[in-house]
Length: 260
Image (spheres, one colour):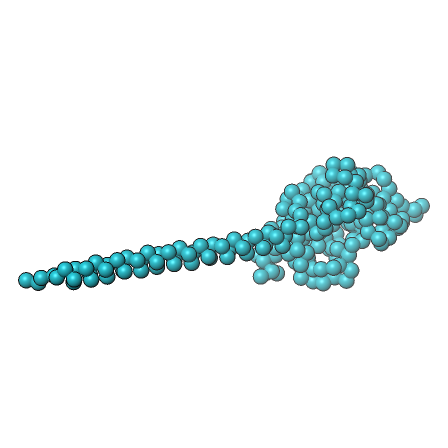
């Protein structure tokens, strides 16, 4: 029979207390460690939010490359809700026919009149706006691919129609979700894939800047390279998509093997 003396009993109790205290401290240490990790994540998130504090995004999620509230913007384009519908709306990051896709003035022989751009939006001469709204092909593209197909049957030369901003029909396809659906019709009609607008952009650059995966995929499958540097453009289509947060476009390029 083992007799546990009082002193031995006290020692066991003390040992249990120490063990319990160590367990509590270990648990607290794990809690503190987890808390530190969460704090670290929170700090990083706050820093990320802080670094993007001056970033602005359109309703479709595309990042706006300029500060719509920068000094002088309101004087140039008007206050929010009071901008020129034919010009540039810096708050929504949209353009009207005076800037892009509009009908242009022509000379006696049908040549496009070149000169100052509407609202002086780009300090570079380009096709002069006629003041009559969107061009025939631009309106057809806004309506949908069937209308584009009908127009091309009667006027096949309009596949490369010149509009404001130096935009061609394929560029206009790269300006909206509806527009991109007419891309294949124009490609099949023989539209020139490599033509650049007044800004130096091809149609694929426009698809990238507006996060249009469907139209972008059609152009790449037709032979365009989303990583190609084009003289006059400030970046490749993929680079533009990255800075615009054009996720759908980039996913499409990744699927086609042009983006990792």
